[in-house]
Amino acid sequence: MSETSMPKEEGLDHSLAFLREGYEFILHRRKSFQSNIFETTLLGKKAICIGGRKGAELFYDPDKFIRAGAAPNRLVKTLFGEGAVQTLDGERHRNRKGMFMSIMTRTQLQKLDQLIQREWEKASKQWEQADQINLYEESQYILMRAACAWAGVPLDDEQKRTEQMRHLFESPAALGPDYWQGRTSRSGADQWIADLVQQVRNGELHPVREGALYVFSWHRDSDGELLPEKVAAVEVLNIIRPIVAISIFIAFSALALHQFPQEKGRLQKGDGSIHRFVQEVRRFYPFFPAAIAKVKEDFHWEGYRFQEGMLTLLDIYGNNHDPHLWEQPDLFQPDRFLDWDESPFDFIPQGGGDFHMGHRCAGEWVTIQVMEVSVDFLVNRLQYKVPNQDLSYSHTSMPTMPKSQMILTDIQKVIS
Image (cartoon, rainbow, N blue to C red):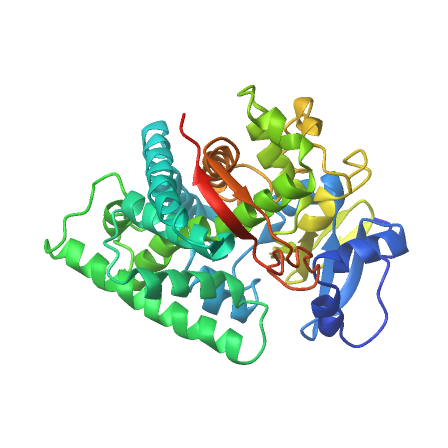
């Protein structure tokens, strides 16, 4: 089989460039090489970067790529947790993914919807008495309380546990003390939930049977064994931590409402416009820069050779801003989702592929639902002002958000 020479970035290592350019690192090179595939070097290892719809479809082929051993250690030690579903393949992954999908029933999602609404109501009553609030921080507490109630996890120290969750998703790309704070928070959070798992198994704690704490405590892996307590704890946190991380999208939703005020009137109609708005927030603003895997065994694709063990990164941010996939991708246009074909390989803010069997984020439905409830509350249940502040956001900080984290003043509940 004839091989095509893959575009290659010269130089010894480009890890610092990745940190400097952040979300746009891969997209910049796709443009400069005029190619959706190129080779680079990251963390001292050769890596292939791919993008485009066909590239995403390839990346999520389980016969071509594996996740075990692919994620950098700093991600495993902070964001994912050791033994997490994101690091599994084959039958072990299917079994574990099935565990997550088992709690994503219509009834359970409706319960989460009610919990989120309740927490917004409680918080907004307190905000009316405050001179100002930091929406990013406040929404974390809303989401933490709702997530723990939904998962059946007793919340023993709200401030401490919420800060731990924030450290898990803010620290993976950080350097120095901020990264080590993430490691410390991971250890503390893992032990907190592992102790609860042990209490469930010993009959000392009786959480709701439909929640993650109960289901994951009694789940058996593909070998028929209960998950180790620490692994069950990691997976319970893989329910709570991503829900709290939706605070980033809530801050960006408020930013979009401020930057594009014409959208607010449309969102009050109840005609599905909130769903389209939420999807466009997820597409337009940065969240995940890339997904990572390793080549399972040698293969050729479109003339390019992929060698076993080669790191491969999928350009998540770049696909969501690819002019070949989206018309005028740098404009905020929710109505683009009126005629979107729902391809699982072009709109991939939380990864692509199949929900049930593949590596697409099991919590994507939760993210959309929580955002819709939150946007509806901001638009139809609250009045507030956005004072002068720094609303810019960096494309190099990961994760990124408005620098002021969205300060709101003069908050009043709307009486319906």
